[in-house]
Image (cartoon, rainbow, N blue to C red; front, side, top):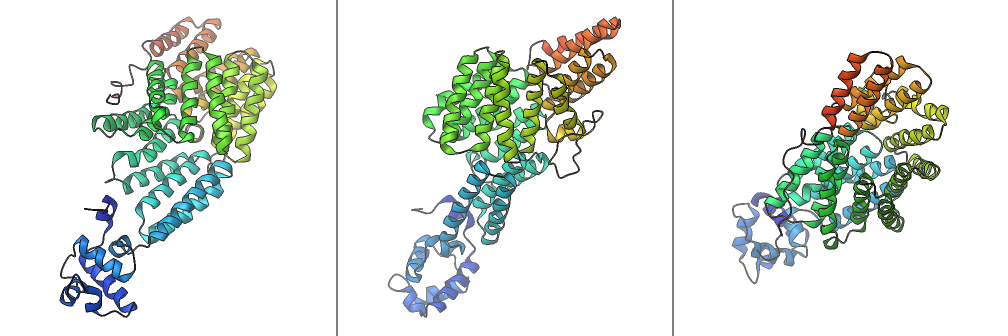
Length: 473
């Protein structure tokens, strides 16, 4: 079909609409039917075409477009290609605004561009704007809205090849992960990976997006072998990818698997590579994530002073962008470091407000009262909400308040049980069992230990199916 793209075929208007467009453009230019038709066609053919009685061939459309002084795409779709260029430039600017500034300001830009793309009939640009809106909502903690934007983008691109839909799929999977729905997040990512590999659609960028996104839910579910394999496959794809932002995200994901293996020096080196790329690209949110993860690495390595410093930098950077969801999560990890440094009053002062904030302010704050879970699960993710309760339980236990400690441990368990976060669940069961045993409640303690052993046995195998198919050699 020459230069005609699949997008042209799908979006080209019907014969009647094209006929009306040819008539309007010919009249505006003061041309007769014969002048428009010659030398390749006749006036009678143009008359039949303008009446909508014939579907013109591609060759005829290209001839008419040239005579009318417009592009083939504009004639077949009624859309000026300059509009597409303008929209794409605007989407790039909106993406930069999200990377460097306030997510709500970026969302306003994406919203405006989505409306304009819808008005002009540019489906692909509209889908890209929807993914951008999803990313903005995700950053501000509005996870239900984020999923709705990603789903709308997927529906718009339903007849596109899978690689085109991958950013929306990946965004939706991450939103489910942040809500604590680890199993479903893995399911979405694994299904897309399997479909890509089984169909021969070996798109390195799409696969790298999916493999790196799968590392975090695998790690939280205790499926460390799968996380390591995803990191290995992602690293193998890296030479085929020229997007530095994607490569930086890969280094962040790989660092998580290295931390789990106790290779903290290598993890920190991987994060340093990611940080350097993000600084060059001026992607502030992801740069903050690097500081966040480096803080976690130092905490795992026992260097609590450096851990606190990195986590505070991450929190301040994210707070300046009003990335509320991530601020709350960093504060939970910062509270853990403060408690380990013996500053329990500061840790408690950080955690209690997180659990008392309501969701009635548009999702800008996280959590509800300690006895409820819906706000915490929706806004901060069950894993970090459970972590906050766990820390408060430890603090209460250190003060000798066993009843409050048990309340927090059980609240954490109720949050985490639906996620399949095997390691966190096993640790909580141990803490609860020890607390009950010291209180002389041996039978209840045994129940807690048994529950913990169940989560510890064969991590990941009870919640995940077969591993995703690997790319063809």
